[in-house]
Image (cartoon, rainbow, N blue to C red; front, side, top):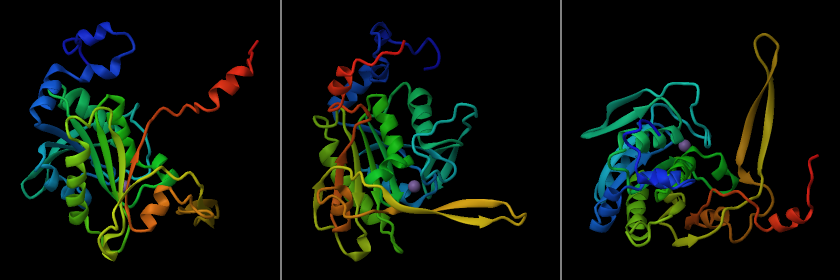
Length: 289
Ligand code: MN
C-alpha cells in the first residue's frame, strides 16, 4: 500500500489488510446498485475476449480496463517484484480506452486497486474472457484465474471467464452469457466474498446444454517434453500437451461438464490448507530440535 495519506481506520485492525480497500464509498456504491467493474485478462489488452466482455459489462456499470500489454497465458499468479510496472492509457478498440500494464495479470489488479482506483475501488473484478478453457489443474496455471484470485486477496468479489478453445471462438456470444451470469451472481446481496471461475463450452457446436455448478478436476494432464537440438547441437525441451486429463475425469468435475457441453461455474478459494489432514498431522507432534 503506498503513501500514508490513504491509510484508513482499518489500519487499527491488525491482520485485516485486505479490508483496507473496502472503503465506505464502496459500501455506498454496493447499496446504490451501481457497479464499478475492473476488467482484466491474461491474453493481453488487445485480446478479442476482453473487448467482447467490455461491451457487455458496460451495460452493468462503469468499467475500467487494466490489462497486460502482452499475452500472459499460463503465468499463473506471478507478480513483478524486480521490474517497474509501466502503465499507459491506450485505445483498446473503437471508443474504448484502457490501461495497458507491462506486467502480469495479478500486477494489473494490484496497480488498479492500489493506485488507479484507490479513491473508489472496484465492486467487482472480472477477468477474461480467456482464449481457451481453464478447467482441472489448469486453473492453477491460469493467469486469467490468478487475476480474479488477486481481486479476492483484496476482499473484492471476482469472476474469471474462459471460453473453450476452438477454431472459431464466439467471444460475443460468450460475453452475453457472462453478463447474464453476472447479473445473477454479482447482485449486491450475493457478491460479498464471491470468487468464481466460469467456463463456456465450444459454442461453435451449438448453445450450451445448461449451467453446471461443479468442482475443479484434479487429474494430471497428458503431457510430454519434446527433445530437440538447437543449431549448436545443444538439447532443449519443449512442453507439449497439457490439456487432456489422463484417465477418466471425475464425472462431477468441471472437465466432464464442459466436455459434455455445459457452462461450468466453479467456486474457488485460495486457502490451500488441507483441512482434512490438518488434525492428523497435528497429532504427529512434529518436533524440529
Ligand atoms: Mn490466456
